Length: 227
Image 1: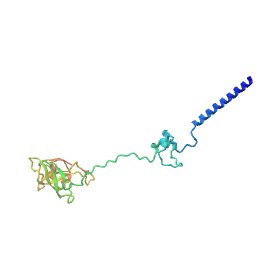
Image 2: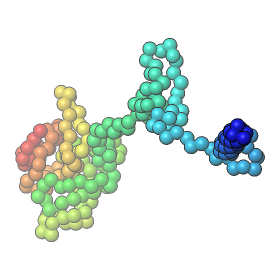
Image 3: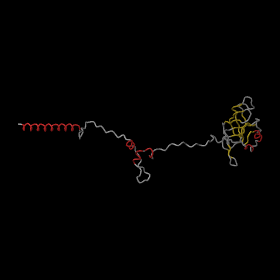
């Protein structure tokens, strides 16, 4: 009787152990993903890696020859693309400064000139070139006919008068026989009479010595500086 009870207990224990193993196996199988998912099941793509090297490696780079001694390694190119990428545009450089050039070659029609004497006129406008470098251009020492645009109230010359002037300063480069050049800040003229004598008694500012060749000796004596 005791032997039968022991055998029955041992068989019950084996059955219980087998049933427990079967339950554990079924639970593990349910947790595993299916080998062939159904077509209706949603597919979630795996997130892309977020490492720095992987993000930079997705940027296209120009291919370089492996035989070239200056070809960088692929790892260095992926890690530091901005330092060795030949496709990056060069840094913008400022445009070179251009030399200051006058807007006009010579004194032309409708050119405004300052008056460099005490005749009463302050500003004149060229309306005709009498003796110059061309039919419509005047330089240092040339004669022009001008209209007075601005004048002092009690001067010898009034506003609106037509006067004859000699150009004593110009903003263009004037080459001389010795190879030097002379240039002034702006155009200026001196009012003269029909006889060629200055109307004023003083000439302000420097005047070129080219006036000596134009027989303007009295004007040179009234000038403060002759260059």
